[in-house]
Image (cartoon, rainbow, N blue to C red; front, side, top):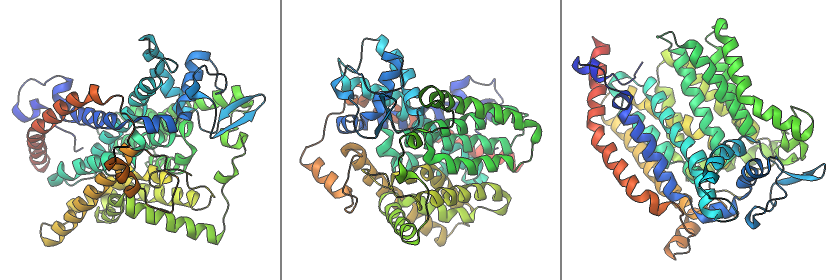
Length: 470
């Protein structure tokens, strides 16, 4: 299963508590989460204020439309449309609903959008998107471990998780309460549970069926961009032909998609009338022309190379994974094909963005593929490819850290955003970072304990590999 063995399995002693068994992974989640929190900045919070409008509407006014806020920062502009006398965001409601859960508790502490917009919106972002992306990094790590050869069970999966979190465009969007970032994280988590379902060795198939359904349902509730790769993960789940457990998958899916059905019914009188259709956002409607297809293909290939080269390395390494894992390989490749079939055949490319936003659903899946290098025999060829992986990952970390600090609202798509953002940083023209002073020392502490725990985690993996081999 490529799961960490407990200390009891390693030393023959009484099993430790939950934190003892999962200490390494918990520290990894918190470290990723806190680093993302450090990058949350006023430039993004001001530019992406639409992502906060729906949160405020749900908690403070008990409605879904975004007009009527008392906060001057939350007046409806941007991707909003008029419908029967009110203004609605042209977004799936999942981002607002998850944010509203945390805003409800934050507001109990006396913080609100009127009194302190920046701190309130930063905390809503931190406890929603940032946390979910942090959790999805563990999903990448665990999935990569499940697909790794035993002898490579820690190094490459850890690189996959860290490069996903910091070396792809997941990072610039993890500091925004953004629907695509949240839904892309749900996708990675759903894929992990689907892989666990396929490896069901402990009779947990029903449990994993429900979780796969819930997270795929949440994908649809949160972002239609991620629907097509979610469909690929659903097909992967069904490929195991365990029909007795299918009802539990459907129950989970219903739970995940139910908020969207309620939202559409309440606001548009039709449970399947989605916001972008209600607002007639035709630039997101599928249509095929050769010129548009080729232009979009070139745009996204160029964007992948220049913003997140590690995912191309990962997709290439995917082919090194053996045929025994053919289902998982097909699921990832099908996710790429279905997403590209959609985004290559619409007019929009995401408007203002740092890097190709519509490729966000592929960031985690691409990074999982890097474990393919673990199947190469030791030698110069393997060292060369791992070196290329490290180089691409580090380049991605630099590019996307600059993007996270400078903000994702960049509209000159004909010019790569790195240099303008880097020049802005050098000139000291950044905005403020509301959570920095609260998170800087805790992040250093968590990073220290994470690194300190790394040798112990490596020993556990070595023991597990020996136990598996025996």
